Structure formats: C-alpha cells, structure tokens
Image (tube, rainbow, N blue to C red; front, side):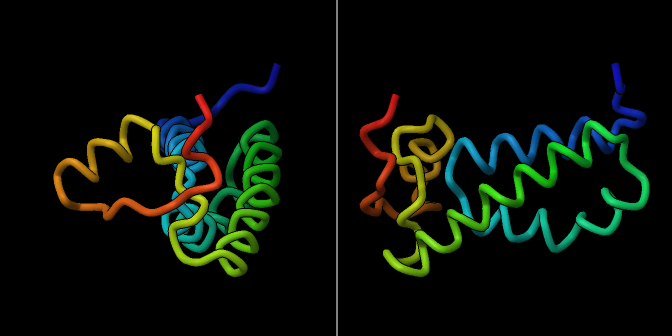
Length: 101
C-alpha cells in the first residue's frame, strides 16, 4: 500500500476533502493553483491519483458555477457552511446540494 510521505500531504488531502464536501469552488481553485506542481513533483502515487480525481470533480463544479452563478455548488447543509453563514462570513445562497444529507 502506498503511504503518505509527509505531514503536508496529510493536511493537503484533508483540505481537498473538506473543499469538496462543502462545495467551495474558491478553495478548490486555490488548492489546485497553489499545490498542483508540488503534488505532481513530490507527492506519493496515492496522493497524485487522489489529486487528479479531485481536480476532475472540481472542474465539474467550476462548470456548474459558471452556468448557475457563484456559490451555486455550495453544500448549504454542511456544518462548516452553516457555521460560516451563522458568523456572517458566508451569505446564504441557493445550492444544487442544499437538500443532500
């Protein structure tokens, strides 16, 4: 089994998962732009594959938001998004995923 080789990879995988779970395209774009080269140059095979899959799914979210408006891919019932709305950091928006559990 291919193991993660460093703490940055563990943290990066967690951030990818959270960005995807919350539907946050801004974070997805940032992770791709900021870390793609590093992942491809130094990450384990497992992390590279996870990144490629993450990027493919993120690109579908980018397309969805391009067609439906900024924030439309947010998963509104995700606990982090609910907290950000409660704190006034994120404004509530309609979402394709708001009824998902």
